[in-house]
Amino acid sequence: MLSYVRVAVDSKPEALLQLMLREWQMERPKLLLTVHGGSENFILPPKVNQAFSKGLITAAISTGAWIFTDGINTGVSKYVGEAVKLFGGHDLRKRNTIGITSWGMIDNNLDLIGRDVFRPYQPLGNPLSKRICLNGFHSHFLLVDDGTLGKPGCQQGLRRKLEKQIQLLKIHPRLNQGVPVLCVVVEGSAAIVSTVLDYVSSAPPVPVFVFEGSGKAADLFAFLHKQTANDRCVGNEDFLGRIGDVFGVERTEAAHLYTLLQQCMDHRESVSKALTEIGLVWFKTQTASSSSPL
Image (cartoon, rainbow, N blue to C red; front, side):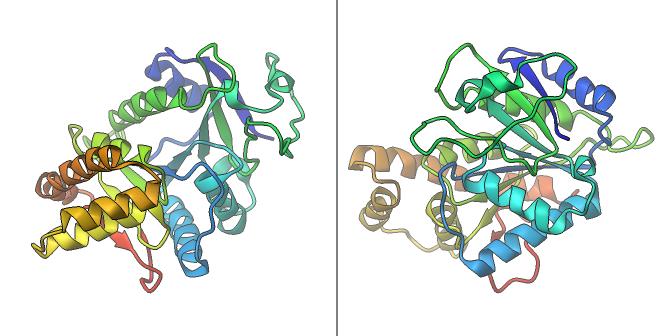
């Protein structure tokens, strides 16, 4: 049985957090892992998939973390669901994997309408529909309604506000340390670049963990991070061409994305300093040969 609630796009994040802690009786998180990446289906190389799946769930269980995703049955959210299924144990409600999804994008969302009721939900989906299905291996869902139908992305602003609200929580009543947030990037479209910039330029900065080898945005971040770490010059023309090929965009858009990528790299030192308290490394890139991604 999954818990879900339909919420307005302008809902107060503090009210949502209280619902999660009190009504759903979720355990107070000691870490928040917010997973971003491709929303369309993509293939992860087996070694990267294994490292991501086992590492994510091991980290979540060992630290008492919550996991945020888009909650849909495609792309990176589907990989998270499969990881929960394989490594998350038998009690689904204790897995604390929360899907934050656009209500208007959900296929058969009318089946979910009701108050304090149990609703069967069939996540098979219509291959001809542009709507999405929820992934059944998440434990809880926040379904964000902005009054539109078939329009993706309305949940992202509320998701970010909720993450910031969670950061204000104390990991223990007797400790003065807030809940750390870690962004995990797997594959990802061009939109992920702005998302990462928002995380690393926030106060306090949110560390970003990139899975190298997963493709697209993640691989671009990993490549640029390696080059700039060694003070190597990245050829503008070559890299602009690479951005254009990866995202299928024209030169003007590729140049804009290159600027955003460079701005992300500008936050390397400040983020590294902030991370010493939680023992993480800024922009650590995961390769299949590494033993543990988190």
